Length: 86
Image 1 (tube, rainbow, N blue to C red):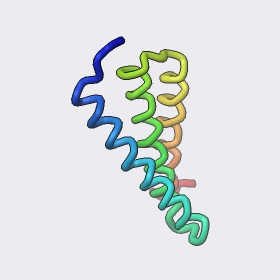
Image 2 (image 1 turned 180 degrees about the vertical axis):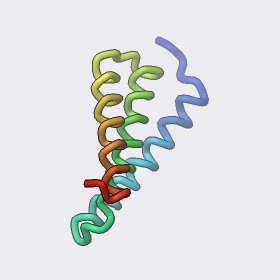
Image 3 (image 1 turned 90 degrees about the horizontal axis):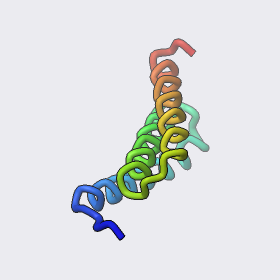
């Protein structure tokens, strides 16, 4: 079994904090639709952190690609929504 490095523990802690932010923004977005771009950006960052953790800690290649693609697409979509293009 591989040892978990300090940076991986830091990454997991950051992922937990971002996940809590996503849940809070999701609840706020449920009541007010104005926060939708921020919720989507937080979700995209969370998906990108999932991809990083899958690659570095869990060594799962297939889910890493799915998380990475979904995170990038959601980040692009949220930026377009924030700019008013969509």
